[in-house]
Length: 500
Ligand code: NDP
Image (cartoon, rainbow, N blue to C red; front, side):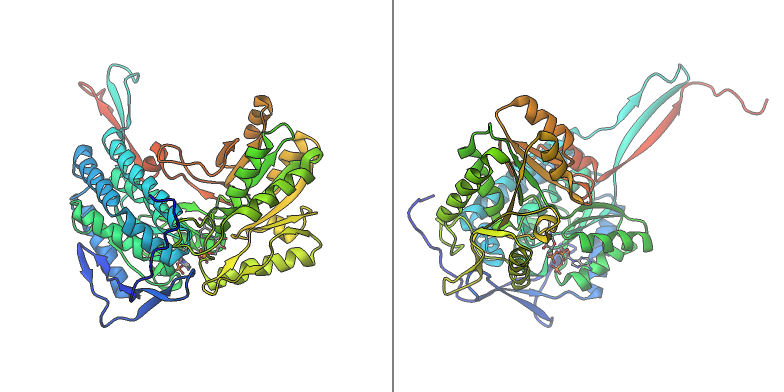
């Protein structure tokens, strides 16, 4: 890729997509349409059908039939792996196209979108190995008359609801693993970012995935999403999004068929910086942790907790990084921080910034909308003099807004870090290994980073403690999540009679 300033052009007209059920595309004609405007440019870029309840039923029925007739779960792990490997190749081949539409619908920088799509290739490759290595357990210690086996079976039809912040990455942290387990799928992307999910359906179809194994329905959360979470024929629901909708998912499961749930919800993630850290490294990591994806990450490091002796100096170092970071047109290859994805989110973030000011926090940097003549942008924002009662210290902002709080002792740092209903992710920055390990053990979070942040990959699991969710995605844990275990007792030889 070139380092010169290449700005890709906008499409001449919006690209139209159909939706995908039982191996066939349903065209957009004769349906209500959602037109998506690029948040970075304010022009229409995609047109996506609004599915009906009947479309949803058709998708679930197709997934149900494909699961029940074992056209996918009945294949060997090696055969499933072959499809996943071809899909990995398909994602690699179409990476530029996927990154382009992801950027247009989401507003993230094109360089970031490319890196994410590259990571998704690895998800498919890694999951293909898991399709072959997935296995149960055996018990050869039950005495001469008995042998015990524990098998893993795919859980069934899985509904996958994904948010708008990482439409392709979050999808690929789930779909390859669900397929590796042998399940069938009905996916519903966020209405505002459906394009790349539909492209993935095409890639998997071309890779030889049998009809009905992956179906994609499009439309709003309150209609199609709600229908999916309530559906009696869906065995498991993987939901990624807000805690508020997460609660509705739990309710819907209880009111319908007790479908198994995987939930990845919000976060208010601490970044603990000790005075003995490499402060230059830490300032860069902290700026990245909140600037990446304009802070619209469930794992954004949004609460900076710094040892008091260096707190002021460190805040200035982070502010300096914010000054230098390149905010702007997502299609410009130099851009590091792109647009805010939705109007509603833009309003929410600006509301939190106002609240921070009103509650007495000191604005150290940013706090304003940036005007590039197109789209919606917010400057990376840093608040000092923050106390743990303030709204900006407690609620997930989901934007490029960082709060700083000082601490005097390790115990105090841990207490501040844990003073939240969430438990998704956390980072610690120190050159003292003892401190790093003590903090890692005591902070309640499903993902932990030492002297780094936002690192990830196909091997290590993703998921939250506390109200950040249930279950794990990715790694071997991510495949096991989509299985259920069956215990099998096998009598050897003649049974001891019950009736003499
Ligand atoms: P939502 O929880 O509303 O949306 C996430 C997904 O759920 C989308 O596909 C959405 O569809 C769908 N959905 C919405 N309502 C329902 C419903 N009743 N039943 C089933 N599915 C539904 O998140 P938002 O997009 O509104 O974002 C709001 C907040 O959520 C953010 O500010 C952030 O705090 C959090 N969030 C967390 C994410 C994470 O990765 N943990 C990701 C995104 C958001 P549609 O978009 O079409 O309405």
